[in-house]
Image 1 (cartoon, rainbow, N blue to C red):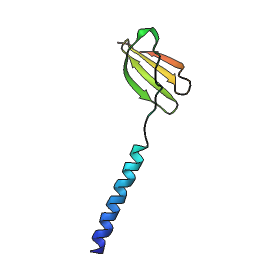
Image 2 (image 1 turned 135 degrees about the vertical axis):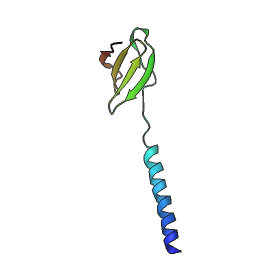
Image 3 (image 1 turned 30 degrees about the vertical axis):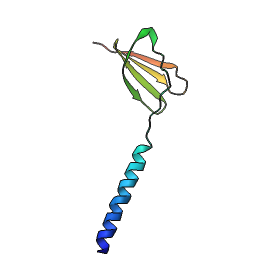
Image 4 (image 1 turned 180 degrees about the horizontal axis):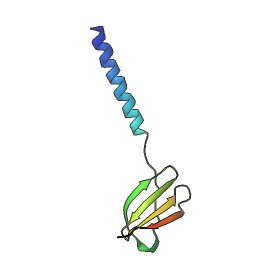
Length: 78
């Protein structure tokens, strides 16, 4: 009986720790991302101090997360 109670308690603690750990990972982006030349975003990837936007005109634009300024532009060959 005691072993069953300990096992149930362990499962509940493990579940609570997983929920707490996963809810802390909320990505943040600026309120408005300025894309050049009227490009439209297709996908966004977030790094530790940068974010990248894949545009509909086959470019990857990398921005600084703090300042919002564009760091790099990569053209994708079709």
